[in-house]
Image 1: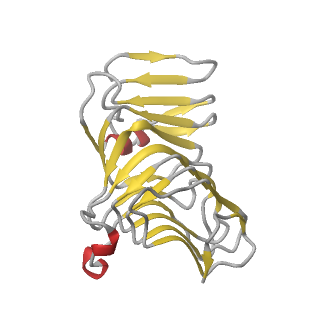
Image 2: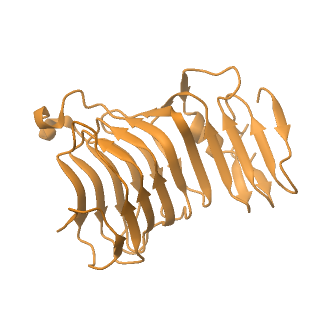
Image 3: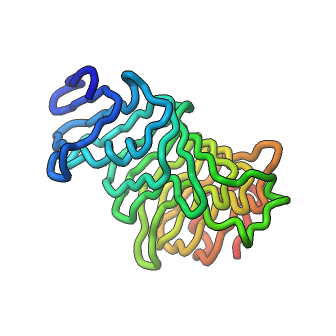
Length: 239
């Protein structure tokens, strides 16, 4: 922590610093109000490493929800959100770098009401998708909403992210998974947005786009029960 602890209201707290982390797993913040963590906002670093996960490790029971604001820089893949009511905001200047075999951000099955917004997620694909040997390229994924045939995260909101040069942009899976995917640019992938194994509440897919290169497949609906996509992009295929 580099600068200050600011009270933002009764029971609420804002921490502004560079690398915010708990000294141990037992050192978490419990609040009746809201928690805001401004990471890499002071004495900023171009490479934030695991700082997003480190900030998440500070979050205990926060009744008013947690917002993690990211300063400009490149952060490591493997971000894991396993707590409810969390927002990660990249403010259009934070990048997560994803290598082969990695996932940028995973929203856990019990992490309801999670928002991932305004991030750039850059994958390892170095050629246009039409020239990639996908059989040899390995896996890489931008954002995963985890789930099973019996459960899934509810209330997720994936919006205004720039996801590119990666095998799969966004995957949502699991029965009862519900939420929205809106305003994202997903570019140069084998599959832009994949929805699978959903047999629960409706979700919305709207306002997403490609740039000049495009994607091999834009939106893929795989093994879902018909009728559970409340709003879908034109051209989405059910298989």
